[in-house]
Image 1 (cartoon, rainbow, N blue to C red):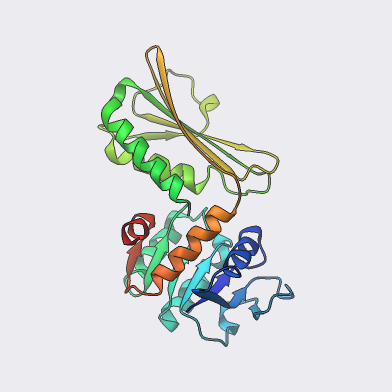
Image 2 (cartoon, one colour; image 1 turned 45 degrees about the horizontal axis):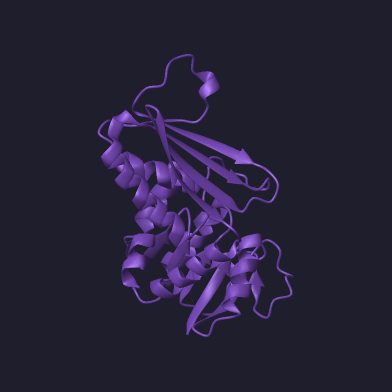
Length: 252
């Protein structure tokens, strides 16, 4: 039985994870961390990692970048592996995460859906075949409560394509600021926020007289919740290091 500390337990994703874990027999929530502590859950909720007084095996974080320092300190001090699903980190915060992974296991992904990670593999294959004969544009859509833009998933997709591009790519987020023709090494990234859209990502390869579109739609937050729980169970068995969805998929 994997015992989980859930950071951000009262957020929308946190609530989805609580519900999903309630339907499983291989894991349980030992404690939650959230600025709101009177959540009505059957596990204790603390407003700070320093106040946690129960034991657990692994942390799931679906919260806010501001919680990172407390999370990493707790993980390092208590030798607990962590699944970090939060997005919107600065370059310096990502460096701290990478440094922590030298001492504990850190699983980090901008998207916990297996489908999205399959999409990344497909668009990387497409880029190697199509090359600079096709322009690449990424469109992501999310609900109107999402704070960061572009999404961490859109950046994951762009980074995957960049790995196989012949030329060093340039990410372009706001074309109205540019008065020039499109360069071949550009990857356009566009964010849409509205309504209750759970998450949609589309990659467009636009060539001469033909367009190829590869798209993923998340119908509910459950796909991300299940992915993070599977990652937590996986991380409860591994040693220090940096892990991502590729490691989880290969371990299945």
